[in-house]
Length: 244
Image 1 (tube, helix red, strand yellow):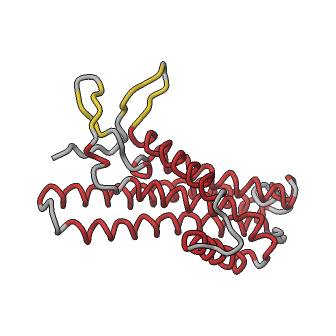
Image 2 (spheres, helix red, strand yellow):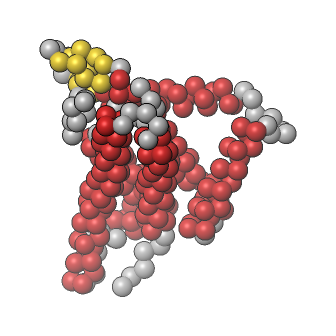
């Protein structure tokens, strides 16, 4: 049975830069999405085919959901690239990490063999980076929408001791968002990988299929939850902060 490693394993290094199997699959995910985007762009038609129709339904559904949260069609269209990119990238990386044989390609690193590919979200570094991007971007859009000083007043308000204390709590909540984002996604994806590894080792044929389908669903749900939480935090940051 393959060794269960809590952290992503290094497959090679370039100077001081280490390439892990999780980062390698994340780069492959980006490459797959870029190739699909360019290929799909050239096939867009006025009368959509099946693939284009599904994509348009997905975009329209996401836009309607964002509109209900942001209460503005213009805002939904403006921030769609951020939310859609987060959702698509996490879901695709989760699904690619579940492909049969992904963990079977071995790479010799030093005197040991490690899997060449590993689901990026099963690496805490990856989920931490995504969480930081999410929190930073939602605050950046808040600054753009309201202005630096108006947005900063949410965290640094000296109008009264109570408002100052509330601001400190808001600042601490931003840090807690990074932690909760990181561990929620990492925990669910890593646990799913461990479950599948054990099931495939004990009963390697028909029995693992329902578990594999379940993890495909979980991979999509985790991407949806991450992107929707980002949307909710974005809505809070671009809204006018009222004095309390």
